[in-house]
Length: 157
Image (tube, rainbow, N blue to C red; front, top):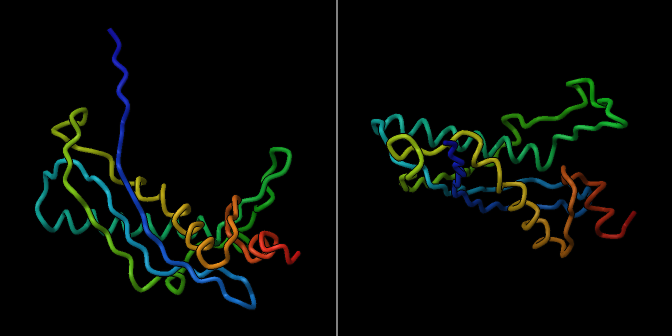
């Protein structure tokens, strides 16, 4: 007998972003991520560490949405140097990254546990895209949200 289990996790993100008027560079601002964390089987200090992991995933997702420009052509990697592949540094992290974790046991997980690691990564880019839309009135459908893509969406290039 085989059993198919769909892992359903719930996560939502809200992000602020600023589009610089002259350079059209996108600067992520404060972010809040809320997720169903499953049954908690750890002491309070472990919950705090889990929350910090979520915050790290949010910052990683902000880098994916705004900085990380992985280029390929015909199956070949064109971004072959770390010097040209930008990732967030301490200066790119917003002052406020909040995590809200709600204990919602998963009936399919062991003892009600759910995955937590990469889950917060998923909604952040969409939240930043919505913030860019709020700021400019245009939607951008390609990552990362570079100044060139903002200018193209605005019809300026």
